[in-house]
Image (cartoon, rainbow, N blue to C red; front, side, top):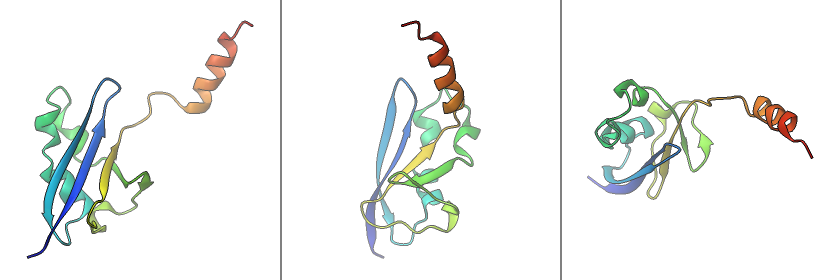
Length: 99
């Protein structure tokens, strides 16, 4: 069976992990995340962090990652939830600006 090389990327504010994998042709984005063993690489996080994350390929969010077959060279990215809404953060910064 033909294999392809893909990457799975996950980042925290203080560190990141990029896992390179050789997977069978036809592997989906969700399957690649499972193969990357991210709970083992980020033991400080609860395992459910990686159970059903939002996923994308090269910055483009996937609507159905369990049905998205990967191509050679794809980088699957796991997206974390925002801690604060970007608009709210800008308002806070603007209010703190005392120039």
